[in-house]
Length: 378
Image (cartoon, rainbow, N blue to C red; front, side, top):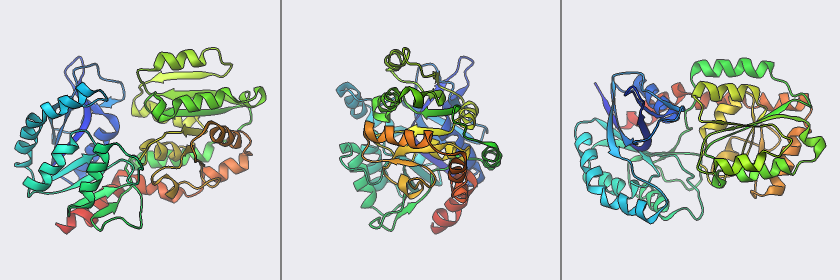
């Protein structure tokens, strides 16, 4: 019987009927880890706010949640709160670590600046770190740079995005899992029946509604299209939420384009958006390898994405997507125009290109690699 304790900043909430739910992408990944571990304890943050519809419950009583105080934020007060509550966080983590067989710490995160040194210096438990951010990020926030430096200069295994010539031997290149075997089959069927009709193209954006994720740039690029180009677009689906929602609604309401702001959606609903869209546009300024790229491509959405981190290791210009670098309005308009001018034959060739790589993003593939490439070394 093996137990894994996961430590993360993943947001959790209580619904009105008392059900515990958490960030959908992380909860889904943990549900599938039960194929590797008998029991899983997730030590993460519990928020006292309404749960978004994208949050999901755990599927088994073999997963136990342990709450950390909700910490984080951009303000000075938020950052001081992390320091002030550090002893409480470490006490909770220490209690759970002592009862487990393995741990996984998910970085980078605000609490990582003190939890990671604690794990490295004071815990002899078997475990590994998952670094989900951009492993090669220039000018990263100081806290992220510190955590990356720690991971490079210690001996426990670290799973990272991408393959890099200078990566230390303990750093293993792992794809971020996001697809079930059933979703892989549904994707194959969807791609078989997809088409690109000149007057019926739909785009989607999935993520936080903020400038850093590139939503301002995306909207500006669409508003820069000529009338003839804009007439080829059926709908622009915006999935997600953020404090600047009103700003984006006001920015798009006078446009002839059909913007649809969906807010938070469940996993199934987001996949339905992918099925009816022809491209996902993510001109973000900082990413690791977002799960939504793989999910969308599985359903025949061509990625128009920033050339950051390991993204270009999976997406090639004009082969299975379009890359943005530098990330400018002019470049994004150019890439959107490429899509609008694709022939149906070219579009089909692109969405069927490199289909074999989708298997790498399945939970089954990820779990197998954990068992045979990481855990087997302990």
